[in-house]
Structures are given as C-alpha cells and as structure tokens.
Picture 1 (cartoon, rainbow, N blue to C red):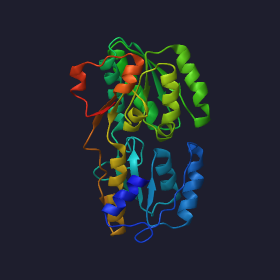
Picture 2: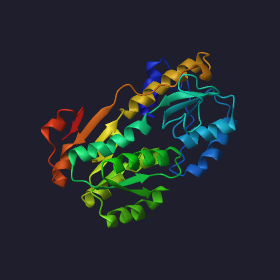
Picture 3: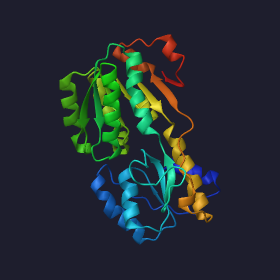
Length: 281
C-alpha cells in the first residue's frame, strides 16, 4: 500500500485530497473475495484495484462497468481476465508480473547453486488458478534435467505448519515457492520453518530473499504497485481500461542471500555471484 501511495503521489494524487482509499483484505481466504467485491462495488468507486486472480475475477463479476486495475497478476490472459495484453477489452487493465515464465527459472537457479539437488519440493496454492499451470511448467523442465518435483499444496495460512511438516518428512534438497499473494504474506513464517530445517528456498518474490530465502529471480514487486498508479491516473483522467495495454515488468532481478548460504553451508561460485543483481549479506 505504501508503494501504491508513492506511485499515486508521483502521478499528482495525494491521499485525502486527490483520492480516498477504501481497503479490503481477504487475509488469505480466497472464498471471501466475492463478498468483498460486492461490498466494494456497492460503494460505487471510480476505480477498483485488485491483487490476485481471484480478486480481479470477483470484481469483474460484481461489475462490468467500474474500471478495474490489476496491480500485479499472474498470466491474466490464460486466467481469462483479459482478451490480450495489447487489447485487454472489457473494464480491466493494469500490470502482469511474468510469473508464468519466471517461476521455472527458480528451479534453474537452485540447480546452478546446488548442482547435486535432485529432489525439489514446490509450494503452491491450489486456489490460485495460475499455480497448477506454473507447477506443470516446472515439472516439465525438471523432468528434462533429471530432477523430481514434489508438489505441496497450501490452501490456507492455518495449514502452513502441517504442510511444512509433510515437506520435511520427504527430505527434499530444496524448496521452490510458486508465486501466490497469500503465500507471500506468509514468507516470514515459511522462512523460519525452512531455516529451522536447513532447507534452501528459491522464489520469484524479491521479498522472500530478504526474508531468508537462498535466492530469487523476479521483478522488484513494489515497482509494479507504483506503476499501477499510472493506470489509476489515466482512468481518472478519462481513459478507458479496454484501450490501455497491460504492461509487463521490464526489470528482472536475481537476488542471493549470502547470510543464508553461510548458515546452510552452501558455497556460491564467484561465476554465479557475478550474475547477481542484489546481494543480501
């Protein structure tokens, strides 16, 4: 929210003067989105901002006229939220995050750092319709390089400890986190458990690397929220969502946490470090 407000300020909109924010949180419970969307639409806002596919879809079902801005969404075309990136159509536009292409790179990065890794657990949210498709891509890549990927479903925050216990019992070499907003919200809990059990983690969220993951490969996520403010401004100025092409990130960041590498006894080659954009020490 701070990043969004910074973006709005950069577009000349100051909270309390140029706009008012009316915020709703699903708190990881995706089944709450339809009721939240209906509640938001009943207030007749000028623009609805939504993060996660389920939130966008619920907003679309609640209104076909109120403009909807996606703040950072996994593969919105495959999810059926828009017709295409160039011509989204309908009442929805905004930012896609490239996770469908970047998440499998996490497995490649884990292998580059830990060449002997042959069994990888993949944490995903089955309620997120993009996650099974990304898991399929990851498993296809893994099969080609002789790696086994074991899926671990995390349906709700309350299930984390039980799910993680099941992961640890399989004794994987590493854990790959598939991009999902509710999983991101649990990053501190996830990383505390992973480090407790000596499990290297990679994801496409930079925040996971900051929280203790070994490595990450993805766009600086807060930049996408700042950029979403551009769409809000354009729409408030009269632009139609259907005519605003959906943007994808232009900057992708490779991050490594050397403190975690040291704690796990993993030596990262200088040749790999030379490729890294951001190092946490």
